[in-house]
Image (cartoon, rainbow, N blue to C red; front, side, top):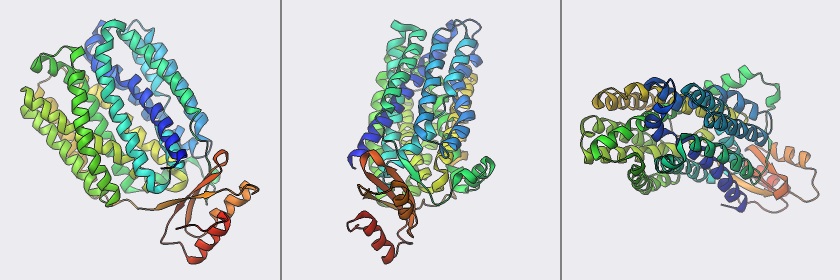
Length: 454
């Protein structure tokens, strides 16, 4: 990776981490501490956990579609501002309805898809899976870390303190956004002339993208439901107090990482993404079904959760990369937005479902979640391997007219996308080598003012 990619991954990863920790610190403790709010019921407690996902699901798509037409960074800043305001509203709430409103407001700052699209803009194709896998692992690490931090901190700062931390993390994320490179995209087709309906229709017509959207929906539905249910089970089966439960989550996370990383490398290097992806879903189905029969015992509960985390890490790492490869170049943020919308819609239904399952038997709870993942496996099974393109870096000539030069590059056969970073003096080209000719390579070398090895 070059210095621009490292800076982008570090900054965007930091933004994701701060948002996820702020969001998920609440999840493992709210099913217990949420009952202290006025008017709280099991359903409303689950709704307060999941309502953030509903806000994200509603606003991800319009914000991401707009980000395909307008600069991405200002939209991310606006989303982080809403996230901070929502945290403040929840922190000052005295009843469960105030918490629900705050969480819903925070959820309206729906910029996960925009951030993934921005990351795709500033990373080369051959580094894309590594970058997206880093984001996926960052998200998974942040979630697990938040599950450890929330129980440890809630006794001293209370639920209000956790919500104040959420707002503070959002402000820090705004500062990190300043470090992210600011790209200028150059496309073959002018998206400004497309209606919103046509833009959305083009993305929704791609069957494999829809399969990925359902996959992320099922993943986050089960994950959110699990962490509404699991705190009570860890207390009943292992006798762990809430503040001790992070000692279970973190080792499982690290073991899951150690097992998942080699398969992520295989998925990209050996072009086996489909096989790894479907295997990960199958592992999650097996994990949830094993919890159906074995979660009443300590070893069964730990092994089942460990298997689930392995599959979770694999899907979190591969889905964003797959979306970036398969999505139309001009509608990349729209595709990412639909996927993020599906993700958070799953979190919403998972929170509500987890609340309803709190008073149900464990076999019914785990069996139902296992059925959701089994359905996902059946629906996703026909998916094809993603396209494997490549990228190269070109130096921008010092005296060049940037607009004219980038349009010249874009007009070369085999060039699908150009992302220009004027401050850094470089441009990334997304290439389809099957369409490149000797003449194309010669033209690109002339525009680069030195021979390109492509």
